[in-house]
Image (cartoon, rainbow, N blue to C red; front, side, top):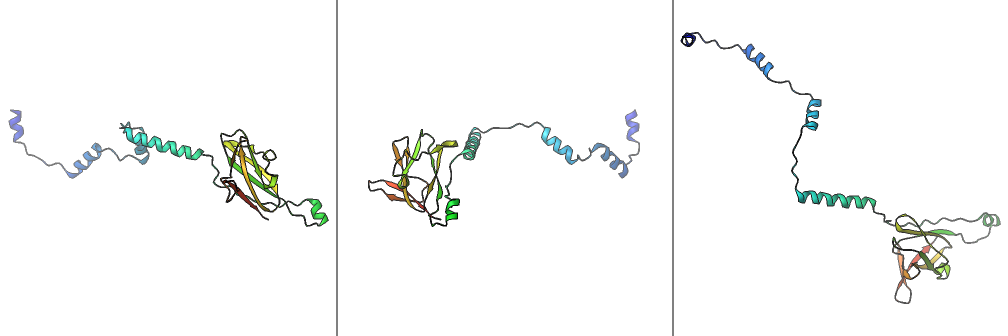
Length: 184
């Protein structure tokens, strides 16, 4: 009976104001940028791993880290420094100035390194190199301006030319000596 009576009642369309108020109550407000950022950080996510991609990323990371910690001098630059003594200046003599030259060799596995050349009568016992960090061996020697040939002696037995030398020359025995030109 109620249904039959309700069917005869007039139908009224809701007003536009009613729809806008209803929509405002049902639609949530737009979140602020801070709320969106917080939701992006705290929302749990599922990650899918690809073993080949992870292995490739690990290899790239290892190579990059190894490259950062590699200790290999690119090039040793010899800077001549003239150091005339006070007596030379006072006396006014024309003595040739001395130039200090630094020789460097990378030999991480070496127990001892020395240098033999024109400047020390090819006697490796006269000029020993000191070990620095990373297997680098170094010595600073005073030289007069001129052209010198030399070789490094590793562990008292192995004679090798300086791999960083800009020039080399045959030694007459089938090997090559490093050449050092010292100038002011």
